[in-house]
Image 1: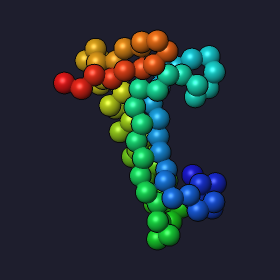
Image 2 (image 1 turned 135 degrees about the vertical axis):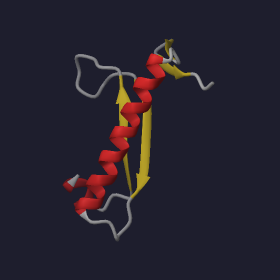
Image 3 (image 1 turned 180 degrees about the horizontal axis):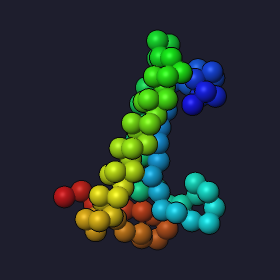
Length: 81
């Protein structure tokens, strides 16, 4: 979080994906993003990031449990009901 805040990023995000042998390389199931402003502190960036991570993981697990996720031709598809 500190690197992102110090670099002045404008968007932060979180990705939930299948687990593979390579760290953070699995097929993506869900992603969330949020805007960062000049008013954000390191603490608020961290809190925003943690909320995004929690929401992305929650939704990815829910999609999987509801059988809404499939892999087709190397792509991950999430069905909307």
